[in-house]
Image: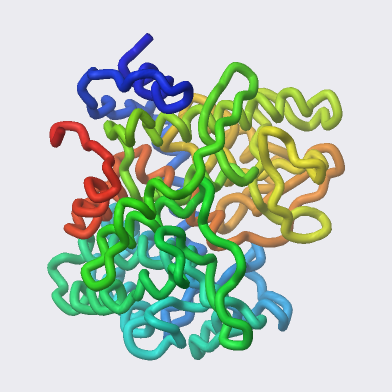
Length: 432
């Protein structure tokens, strides 16, 4: 058994921690045809953020029509904090790859940072889940959201390092981050953060108490320059173990995105969290998701070795937080491209063939201006009319990390994150 698997087994089964050193994995080598495919998918995904961000505020729309046509009135001006975090990172990728002149990309990023630093509605530095893209005001009676603010901060801190030659970007990023009152979001609990707060009713009853996409949130809190959390917050959330199809790993909620979002920014490669290798954990979760889809093919023949992937997405009847394993009962044969798309950085051997098959599906009917439609169902022929910003975003960021690790490099260069990992007790390769 490798040192990595011994470390993982120690966490799962209470074995003594392996004394093997933590090592950085070797970079993945891609074939020219894979690079060409990822370049096309990434540029299309980036176009979503280039076209679907408000020219005045920089806020990114929550969703848009896959063909770029105008949304209905109810969704036309609804932006999300999380989508804007992905968008800020997307402009960094565009600058790095020469899709936009660096100065133009910096201007676009600064516009959003200026808005969040000085104009967007907030409470103790925390932002609303959904905002009016033109004004930054709350829409849909949404909550002040701790996780959506954290995903926004992923983009804020990435932009700070990517555009390090622009002092105003660094100053705005610092203002947004330092204003966050993490201790207030504890709402009296010694360790666990609340999901959010509403002005009408106060704090939401739910807390980030189980493994989820909230690893990013807790690391931001541990590294906070003004109201840092303690290691107790990192240790307090539960780590339930799932075994499926020969894969054993830690997992909380069913959607696969819980294994992807934090690691779009946080580089857990070559780290040891008390015996847990979170990068390996996400790799195993991806493989288990594919194995589940192959088992579901008995009921939904559209699933197969190259048409797999179930995570929260649109479905024929609306947005559904489906996933697994174990498979949620609402699964209806829908395939979600950002499932494998968001796992490109973990499992390119499985994700690349899946995405290529999805691009070819129906002669390209699920692949268009912004890359993939949010979801489609090969059994019924249904194809979503929309693209979601967070789903285009996780695909773009994961592809970029696979291709060169740029997002990881930018985000991990922040001193607060460098402080947050050891504060959590996470050992980093070469720093033990």
